Image 1 (cartoon, helix red, strand yellow):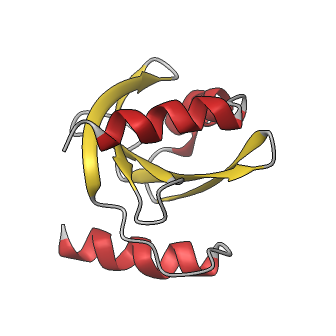
Image 2 (cartoon, rainbow, N blue to C red):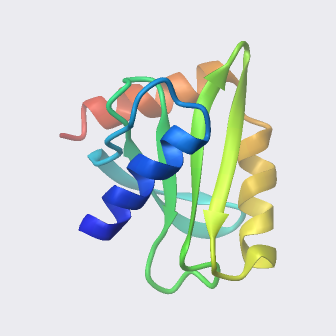
Length: 111
């Protein structure tokens, strides 16, 4: 887990985050692209990571979702099966900023 947190801090900075993000806030499971994923909130209060769970054929793989105007910017990273992650990525890329806000609010209440 510590390695994942360090990876996320470095990766989020590289993806253009204004500050290093701690993406260990709250968590719940959700299905994207027909597969189970874990969603966690980030310290900026507006971004989330969506990570593979055990048994997901894309494991290890994760997405960083950040608001971008009315839409959501999706960055992906992982060494798992990218084709298994592709349907989830497509679904996440269709999200709107208001959908992301709903996830963030849900994570705030899951603490």
